Image 1 (cartoon, rainbow, N blue to C red):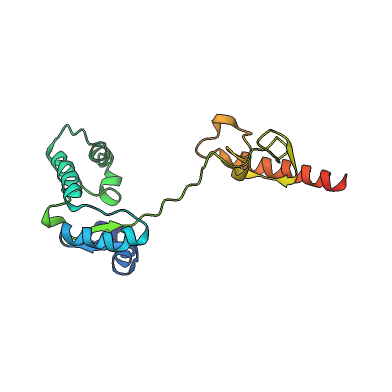
Image 2: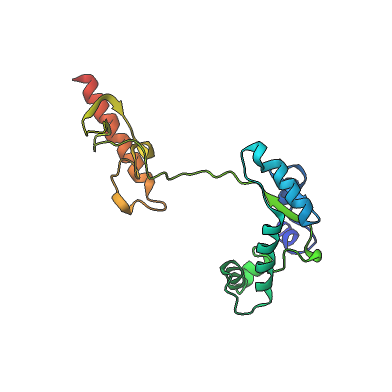
Length: 190
């Protein structure tokens, strides 16, 4: 209960968020948009392989979003989503921040987080048969090379076809691993 009350009562972000703000290498905390953009470009700009954030463009986008806070019939799906979830008392109290204007000085500091995109579903991989044997571009078996799981293509060698969506890859990955293992063992024994 004390932890729950600590999130509901009091100012500032929860402890872990404050730690990230103070110590996170991927966090930029600033009082103005100008400072925020400068910090974002320092940690994620061209010298680090990223793009330059243009302050004027970012300001226009944020201002357009902030206008939707005053619009009861907003077309901004994120603002509508937050309002919808705040209708449930539990989320309103502890999970979902009240909609507010990002550029309003009362809502400072501004925080940006550098994200690193990680893909967990490539929907690609090596072309295999149902025994996990890798195939050449012409469809011939490549002797001695096997693949399983997502390395074997869509949802574990394509075993689940286009139904291999959210949460269904594990079965195909396990099953393709078993099939590839059995095929490799049989080839080694035979």
